[in-house]
Amino acid sequence: MTTSHLTNPAKDAGQVIGYSHSTKLSKDDSQVAGYDKGRLGGVEVAFHVVIPARHASTRLPGKPLLLISGKPMVVRVAEQAAQSGAQQIWIATDHHAIANVVHEHGFKACLTKDSHASGTDRIAEVVEQCDWPDDTIVVNVQGDEPLIPPALIRAVAEHLHTHPECAIATACHVIHDEAAMRNPNIVKTVLDKNGNALYFSRATIPYPRDAFAQQQPLPANLPVLRHIGIYAYRAGFLRAYGQLAPAAIEHFEALEQLRALYHGYKIGVVIAEQAPPCGVDTEQDLHAARQIFEAQIKSEVSKK
Image 1 (cartoon, rainbow, N blue to C red):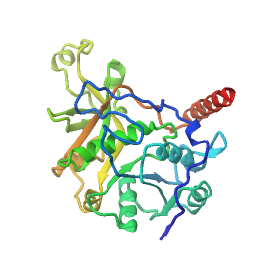
Image 2 (cartoon, rainbow, N blue to C red):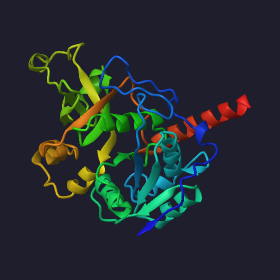
Image 3 (cartoon, one colour):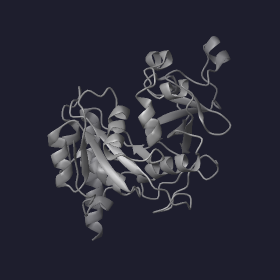
Image 4 (spheres, rainbow, N blue to C red):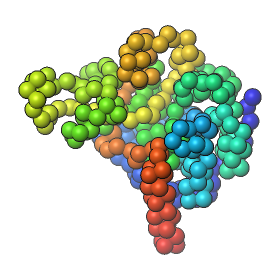
């Protein structure tokens, strides 16, 4: 069952930016997409954004409906996505209350099954319900990222558009902090010469053998890339994904994207100059997001 309204972002969406609208991605790396409002790297790119929004949450029940400066979190995410140049924005949810709120704020909602194991599966159902062609580019924006930079959404869409050999595009940024490099909650990736992912891991990769063997600090020049959890897919891949057998590496690392690599799909990676703002997983994260939005709104009001 699908319910929808035409996308019509709230009038003050442009006031809430989190990141700067002119977010810059490095121009020095050929695998890093540029940013130009309305266009990507000078190329017109057609893509849709789907925002999975599950009502159940262990740490923050009903998280998509929690208010941030007077609007539900999922609406704030949709407003950020609305600035990315996407043709359509859909919220994929298993809950009528979320769908109703989405509609009230002028966005589209697709009611999906409550049995999906992952956001990717939920997005795949949207692809089927909307009957999008296999070459349609679909960007997965997490429903708990109200500060997601629109430029980053556009960048992964452009990267997939300009790399037809890839089924998926994602993003990363360089990290230098040793504690982050060693933190298993921070996912790392290594790339091949074409900017495609070779592997993702919770371990420190590349692995500095001598430093670990001698229990020394990690080398200052260790090229560690932190994965940013945003994905652009081709609709054809999403249709195939549900038929792919889970891989052992996916299970042990607890990283869903390893299933695609295991089955031979290429994942292109955009390298951003900086990390995007954190998502909302805890009450502390929610408080921080609210403060950022309040400060931004006050700043905009003071300029009028």
